[in-house]
Length: 342
Ligand code: TXA
Ligand code: MG
Image 1 (tube, rainbow, N blue to C red):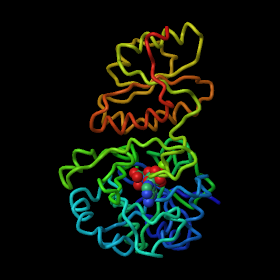
Image 2: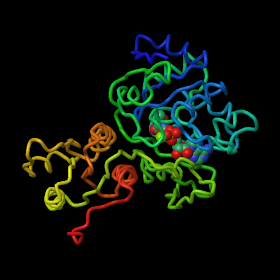
Image 3: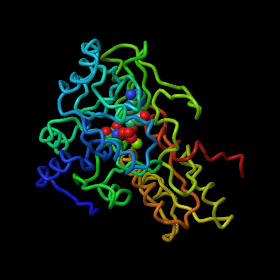
Image 4: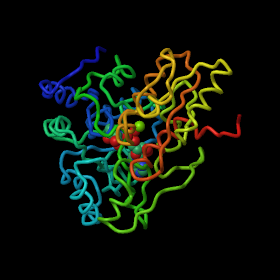
């Protein structure tokens, strides 16, 4: 199959492919999604095949209007959920709700009695859903286990030949996946941190908790996606928590004649005075730009199999930093640079 790249002028072609049960990747403000008609069981099954995704990991149902949710979700949750939808949709918030019996296939829900809903903040994708007139399932459009795609080229790299097309709308704005909020627990619970923070959600619905639950492989996890290895490039990522430790970490690796790359903000890169043949990737000048570029950086160095280590800059665990550190820690398998290791 030839994977076509579509622009804003080709949305009708893209929606026709989706209506025919084909897969088309779509842009959102967070990351690119792998789209299929949520009501077409065979099409949804193909999403798992194309990604190499375990079939017990349910998909987000993307809508173009909050009203679309209530064709599927339990209406008892309507007044609570609508406060959040009004405040944050379209935007990087995914809401888990109980569903009406038989309204969504078990392929979408992974057999759970709940489903994840989100209205993405991207004009092309909202128009695509309007033309299709049905919701779109969409996991991130990467091969399972790889960093989520923040550019159409990333999707092409992973899924070329496996999907019908990609709607290209340039690099995504946020760069990290949406905040996943479980409204079905007695205290609403954040299953995956994202750009929308706990404090912002609490301001609208009152108490919200973070999920600190560690998932074992043999239990059914609350957010099934959390149990799988994620965002991992081939090289070992090591988090550098304090800017001033970069020099020491670099010296250690140079002494060992190890090949490595550095991902850091511009101020750090400029101060380090690195030799020009050392591979570096700029995270920009803030946690906003770092979040936007993190996955692209991990992918860049993944292309070069000679790189053994990636030294990547950490940040504080506050606000957007919480989502950034969540993804970086997963990519690093929690490995942080410690001075006493010298
Ligand atoms: O920003 C995003 O959320 C992107 C864009 C494309 O919308 N999508 C995305 O999808 O990241 P995915 O499939 O990579 O991650 C969805 C997460 C997974 O961890 C999944 O297990 C969880 O949401 N999830 C989906 N349905 C669920 C449910 N009913 N209960 C608990 N967790 C659920
Ligand atoms: Mg994903």
